[in-house]
Image 1 (cartoon, rainbow, N blue to C red):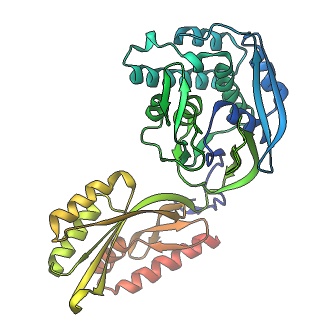
Image 2: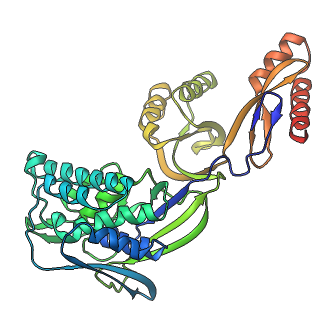
Length: 402
């Protein structure tokens, strides 16, 4: 990174982080999460000791199994029949009494707090009156704490998650037959990308949904990482259509090109003036569009027209679409999701005989002088724009080699 007269290279774009990526192509549950994390390298003995410290009078088992030919770890909890209905304070007391790291304890409490909020909203009762039913049972407490401990044992700094397969059909609960996803699961996954594919059964449980919705920093494609390990956690059922496993990928962030999900908006226009389209482009950029392009095309009845293409973060797509409707004559807008890969960029200033010029550069060695700075310097000094750009580029190269 360049500061003042010194330039150093950041090969990895900064301090690397350990990332855990949940690949929930067949859903996610608490026991699948624990099994996958141990399969990926979490110390089983240390994890089991942490779970025993909860004093739940349970036995914990980890065994190797297969789902559609994929070797996976199956985590299970065995215990005598106990009181199933627990309030949030009871669960908190159990977790706080356990011999856990501060990070694992805080994460486990946060997961149950979020789970309680979702159950309270689903049943329209105060959170302090929520009975956790199945999710308050010994196995669910063990699943949540086990997952949080395993993540801590692996030294995970950030959690990412794929789009989540929630399943379909119905599920039997203490409230009777409910649609999939169950109300609490749907509430927990609000704003998360979900879909249904495969067997008609519950693939994502409230416990699994609570874990990812509480702990995951982002949902979407796998980020750029140096892959260290992978693990598979087996679900209870063995489906004929797909492997009933949760995969986790553990890696170190590389600072290289990152895949991000963007929304692409497009409209074909054949009756707006160039002035209107130019102004619309300015408004779209001011409103936060990542990119806007105007492409000349030949439309129906041989009429010349323009395709307006907008690249946007998904949260801003509606706002940008409203601007396009307001400023142009289009009656319809196409939209679709796309994956965008961008290089991590740094910005600095370089001293030249025409003054200070901003430079943007990446870890791959590509760089470019800031156009506005070069334009201003060219006008002030009465020289050609290309002369200023060449001067800035040469000055930056010298600093790279110094």
